[in-house]
Image (tube, rainbow, N blue to C red; front, top):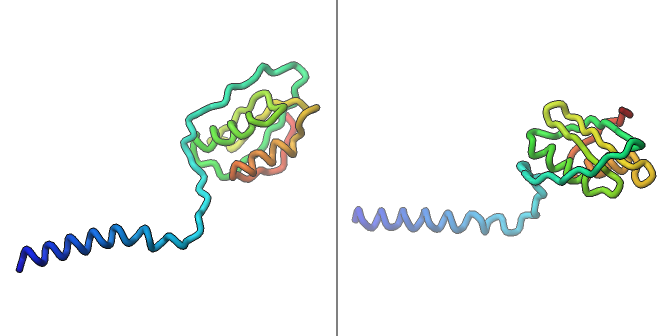
Length: 122
């Protein structure tokens, strides 16, 4: 009898572990921002006529968040380099004003999943 109870308990436990994921099968997928992006895009040589903008960014919680924003910025045509700090909440971006503007820089940060306050030239 004791063995049968233990077997039933084990079976119940196994069924509950299998059944739980299927309970969420009909739920919509939720986009989750991944922290810990340890890959950093390389910067490009910055010419003397490059423009610089510093943007206040909110929503960063770690260095991985800063890396994620920097990588998004470095993919933009016209961005030479970017320094992003989750400690200060600032992204400083050097770019070619003929190819890109401050608004596009801010849009890239928003698309990466963060919020940007009004830019200030630096």
